[in-house]
Image (cartoon, rainbow, N blue to C red):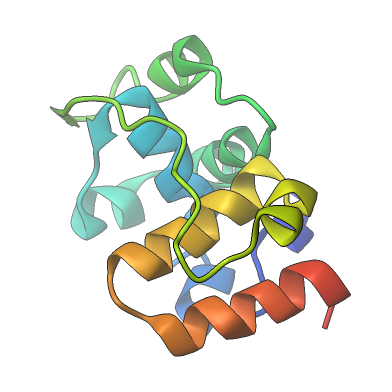
Amino acid sequence: MERDVIFSFESPEAHDLDHLPLAARRALDRSGLKLGLAAWTALPLATRERLVALGAEEVVRRGAVMALLAETALQEIDPRPEPARPADVGAEPWARLTSLGRFALAHHARKGRQALVRRALDVLLKGR
């Protein structure tokens, strides 16, 4: 798996795949699935890596996510739509982001992490 789909502003635990990276969370959210931390860490490393890769694709393929996790105890939830642009992010920068980048910003904005939204936007647009 290419680790460059795990952003530099994510936790060290996400980089080690001990916690769900944003790409894995996006794959689950878009597929209507919820996976707890214990279930995540119980998955084989190759499965975690594949889920991250699926979540980094421009369009999450629900069927591929479901097939990958067919043997896993999951909670089904309503699939989340692609996120709306946070009020404090301009339309032009938003349009320049990948689907995963937009998900990352919206995820942190939804949780009220404005400092992280600004940091993430800087990383996503300038590559730092």
